[in-house]
Image 1 (cartoon, rainbow, N blue to C red):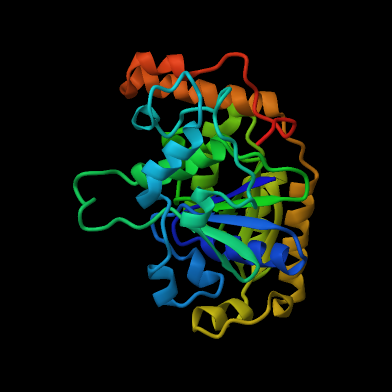
Image 2 (image 1 turned 120 degrees about the horizontal axis):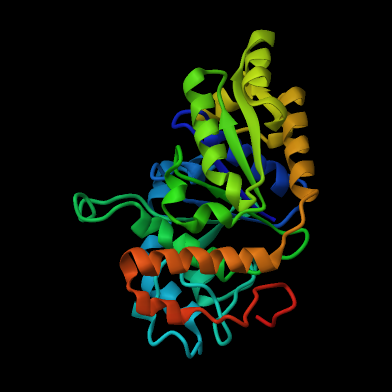
Length: 314
């Protein structure tokens, strides 16, 4: 299952994604996590020190390696440099499994608390005024387009805040998208915007309330988002301790909050991926990018007879 966490800036998106990832890892599930937020805090939220997080290798800095490896022997792609973030796989492309060893994972991912973690990378001084953040996130999107995960494997991405994911086809790469929503008008507004954009693409959007303090907060969320609300997290001493540098085992999270995490996993496990649609949407957004800015000739990268799926050799 591929899972995304989105929401308004400051809603607790990274906190909730780290709790969900930690709960999966504690249960023995194989988890690959990617921090694709412009504010890179997932490693620290999962227990790394600030120094370790700053030294983490990044996907953005290894884009050339990622392109070269994923291109493989695909005859439709002239060279790695001609690949863009939306380039879909085709016959001859290298497909990857989330927990295999290969040059991309060896260079870009590290183990942390039972989780295989990669980060897109922060803006640095050379990027300012020159690049948008999609130059970093594009590496993750390209990787997801070529990633074949199977039942029982979890790929979790902490996304950029707000509706920024809609600047590419990245929002279609997930089986479940959890939108973290505070009991506020502004946070609900982000949900409505996201739901409106995602409606025509079959995105499974699930709302999880956060920073809920009382019954009035719950009632507000229920009134505003209706059946999209799966559950909520209330004020947490466990989270506050982690934010002060005193991380605790996930099993010490408050029982009510642990129950919400279990409901989230149940919602994920109930989904089934339509691989044909997954490939079709990758192609659709690649063609949109080709027409809009990358050059119509990149449409030739599409292999019309190829469908990504677990039955293919990797």
